[in-house]
Length: 344
Ligand code: FNR
Image 1 (cartoon, rainbow, N blue to C red):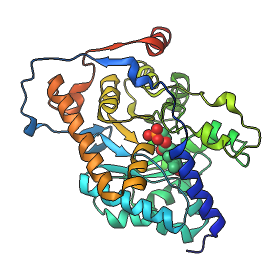
Image 2 (cartoon, rainbow, N blue to C red; image 1 turned 60 degrees about the horizontal axis):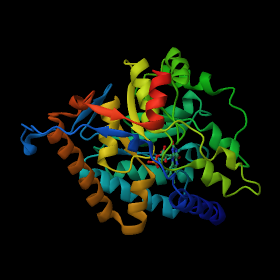
Image 3 (cartoon, rainbow, N blue to C red; image 1 turned 180 degrees about the vertical axis):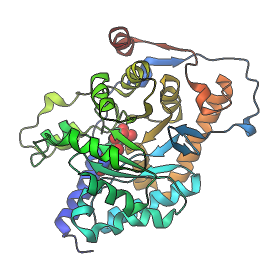
């Protein structure tokens, strides 16, 4: 690997910060109770957890969300292990940002390994909104990806001392990528959520797939503040919590294909996302922590456990398939209810 050691070590530090920082005490999924139903009348063994997200056909609503961009032996090993676990469990996965591999071809292997390990699986490519259409198509080709994620992370960049400061090309880039891409283009946040105002703009330039990437889990304000001499700590709780983001987008934009992610701790948080209007849900930090602390087999066990949770919830809700979760009975409390009262 040609990548210099210090850069590779910085990536690993970043992963440890991302997994180790203190989580918010309150997760807004806890502002929602699913109403228990007593009269299950389905056969557990005939349940189908496949789901359609627009043109994407997934065999599970769960996927591993984007992580570990950049090169280095450790990143490659992590990507390989996630790809093997995703294949064994039949779930999709997104790779981390490919921007550095677009600039440094020797880093491509870190990503290509994912397709090598899982030739038939569902894989999402990932670029930033600074990517032009040509770069985005190259990122898709690198993986023969089934979809492309474009991450937007303004606040993370602003807190990073060396982060981007100029986003004037962003909307033009996204519009051109959507026009030229042959696979679905998903615009995602990285833990700050997406508002109805933002989606109104994204929709007007052709975007139809949104991953809310909401607040509640991995918190990049805290991660990047660790590297600042004078932290911008007032932004540590900035962002739209995931259930609130899903609620307002599904209410205002029923034609948008929604994905719920950010602070999903287990299968039931995932099910809550599906009830609120998401078609699939992503998990990043929580799954990476299992892989790094306990290894690949533990990651497979964790994914199977989440599938079991989803299927038990299907039994309880009498949901024969994932789309049947939509609008099952629930009650909202506290801040999430207040958000719903003012934003729907
Ligand atoms: C991320 N995330 C991320 N997202 C993205 O679009 N491109 C990227 O390169 C990365 N890199 C990355 C590295 C690490 C170590 C973590 C933990 C996360 C963000 C990720 O996809 C997700 O949006 C957030 O982590 C929120 O989800 P969780 O972690 O709360 O499930």
